[in-house]
Amino acid sequence: MKRVFSIAILGYNRRQVEKYLSDMRKDYEEELSKKKERMLQLMEENNKIKSQLKELEKKLEEFSEREAYISKALVRAEQKAQAIIEEGRQKIAAEMYQLEMEKNKWKARCKEIRRQLLEFEYMVCTLMENFYSEINYLKSKDLTDSIFAEEEDMECDKNSEEENAGLLSVS
Image 1 (cartoon, rainbow, N blue to C red):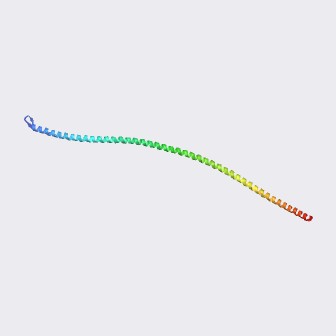
Image 2: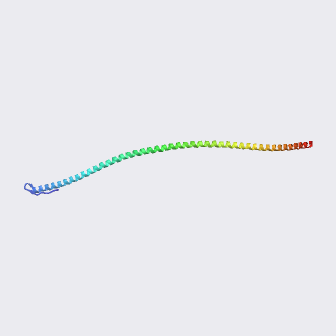
Image 3: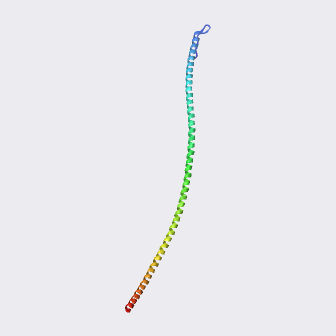
């Protein structure tokens, strides 16, 4: 802001200089008040941003705590899940071992039963053969006995007839 002043007796025109200084002072005061207002606005905005920053830092801290808690919970859950899976695998292995033992036991029992059945079949066959032999023996004995009995009966009949004839002749 350059200004040219008119010259008076002892220098520049005093009124012009004072008016100029007064105008300059007003301009500076206005500028200064604008800057103060701007500075107050900026300070207010800065305070708002600081309070927002504090709130966000609190939230961040809360989220960090939650994250740590969740992480710990996830780790514990993962460990528990692994423990459950391992326990399940152990139970499965034990059950499989028990089932295998039971299967082997039943196989052995099945073999024993088959062996006993074969023995029983052999005994039945032997018994049947013995019965057939006994029946055949008894049949042949009955036949021979009946033949001998018939012969004896015939002889007895002859002897009876002879005796009856002898008695008849004696009388």
